[in-house]
Amino acid sequence: MSDCIFCKIRDGQVPARAVHRDEQCMAIEDINPQAPTHLLVIPLEHIPTVNDLTVDHRALVGHLYLTAAKLARQRGIADNGYRLVMNTHRDAGQTVFHIHLHVLGGRPLEWPPG
Image 1: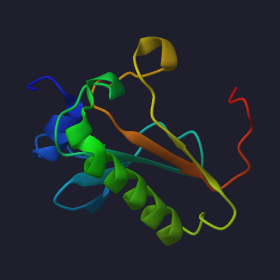
Image 2: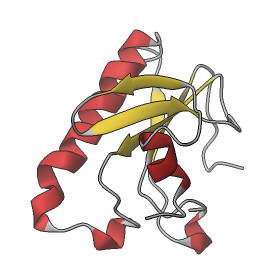
Image 3: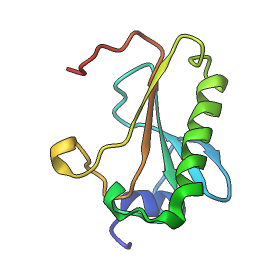
Image 4: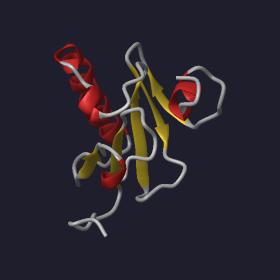
């Protein structure tokens, strides 16, 4: 997608604070962090929303979650806890239509979020 910011970051056209990259995904620091640790785990494949996932994406989605857990351990937030969030469409707060998993931690997180 030529207008997708995450595809542009993936392709090196837009700078980002990358913290991880492998053959399936990348992770970057969120530019508007909502917690001391706020990372975005993004598949390299452009998938607009969770509704666009297919059975063929099972391994990829699992990989996103395993990568998030690895990053949480590396950031020292795994033992105290962290939140993983994937928003789907505008009413849920999705602003970039390329699926991504938010990793939030480093402080107690209220529920429901407010």
